[in-house]
Length: 189
Image 1 (cartoon, rainbow, N blue to C red):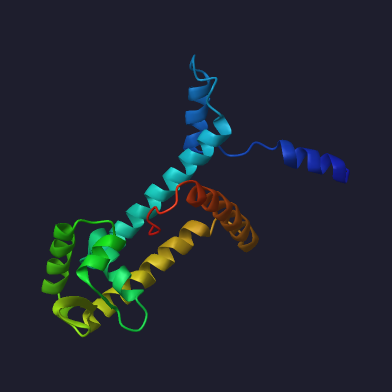
Image 2 (tube, rainbow, N blue to C red):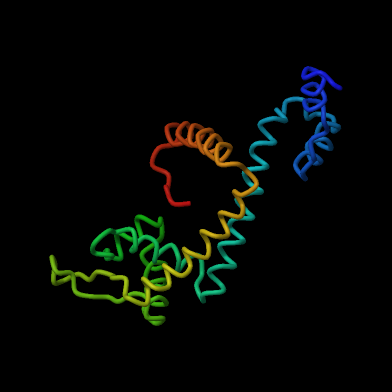
């Protein structure tokens, strides 16, 4: 029977499965002139980027299945998160989503044609309008967020609950440092 120390040593030296980033890093390390590249940092950046692309593709698939675009979703989400009113001025939406007013008008036009939003007179300023999420808009948001939540849970299911909490804490620490270094960048994912 093997001792506990031997079992631990075997567990620590067991070959860890390689992902595509590991294979890339091996090729990178073999190239002359790459000595200045920190392979741990490169691994973090490449893995975060790869995971982001996969999640974004899943989100785009969810939205396509529901007749929406990512741009539509951003507007619906911005309005949905306005709490009680679910409305905003087009200018405020444009600022929040970092869009020109022309681009915002195009998005609102499309969503209005689909019945997801409506333009209304601003109750505080008769010269202005506000954009409000309709019942259809609420329904579209609710349907897509449910499907996407299940897809995102699948991505995280490779980790235990405690690993998810640990990873969330580490990513939060990294993001807080980045937010402090470059304040004012858009907070939407």
